[in-house]
Amino acid sequence: MSKPTSGVSAARRNAEALLSQTKKRKSDFKLEQERESEALSLKTARLRELRLAKEAADRSAMATTPPPVRRPKPRRSKQT
Image (cartoon, rainbow, N blue to C red; front, side, top):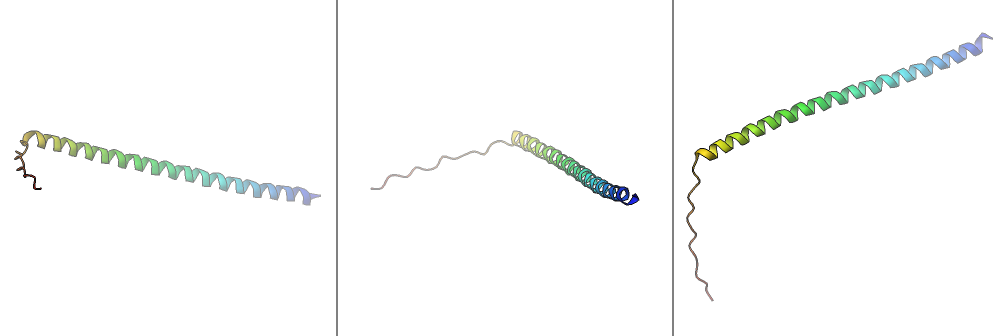
């Protein structure tokens, strides 16, 4: 009679082992996703800071440099 109980407990152990492996894979996957998301957020913030700094430098350069003088284009007469 010990066979059916050991069979059931072996099946239960196998099922629990599979369940724990699945849970571990899920948690590892979620952790990896969080790491990638955080890395992307940091990269985006760094690039935004660089863009804003460049735009500010461009604005200050435009303020100190006078605009170029445009000469009017000579008009051509219509030829028929």
